[in-house]
Length: 352
Image 1: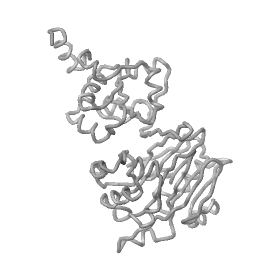
Image 2 (image 1 turned 90 degrees about the vertical axis):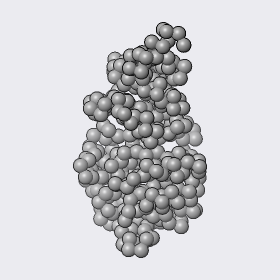
Image 3 (image 1 turned 30 degrees about the vertical axis):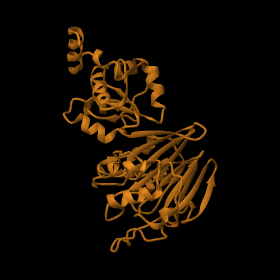
């Protein structure tokens, strides 16, 4: 290596230049970066500080401060190795340094030239909502976005439709402002517990065309709703729905979710099959759940599954992508390594 290149690499290590890493990752402009964000195989990474991130960031971005000593460790825990990482910072310098580090670990990385400053200058949107977003494509190429809100609450966007799963307005110290979101086309409620069933959230999300799909207990408590019981199937316009069992099996826990009362749901949207497990353990009925693209499975005792049960359940259902959710203080970091040989893409999102 000549002296000029050695100096460039030294400067790159300080985040001041990236000449030595150009062969390891790509740079793109705002237009190219925006196109990347629509790709289901891309994860957006903001490498600024947590304080900068809170002031405004790109929708769906994961935040890992590149200045932290454990940056690579955190990145490996949060970023799937088989996804392209679309990375940005304030001006492009810190993200260039981080891109070089991630590329050295085997990641495919694309860096935003000019950072979020260039993004804003191009009049592109930013958000202050700290919700992680995952994007998938249906069979016909339409986009489905999943927003990790809190605990078991998930927001979905599909073809101009708004779908809400177990919406709650407040859990612990986290509050969700549903009044700032569009009215829901569909609201799915799995069961009556307060971390899944919230009359205030349902009221805020309900408009003239909202369809509420729930179990009998919640419909009775509300005085309305499309009731579905375990094993029933229905079609609501462009969504096919199957209500599946969700219950406890461990001795001493069955009172939390008795068999036959609560629902899980399988939604089929333009060929994309999504399993919302609700509050359940690794029940025998999971053996009959097939061809799932995306699964949301709970992991916290004594109410749902242990990490070991979650792994067993995932191996039974075999989803292409697994989101552990409803995990409270349960440590789910080891789940990806336990399923790495099963071809399941495990994505841990910060629902709590």
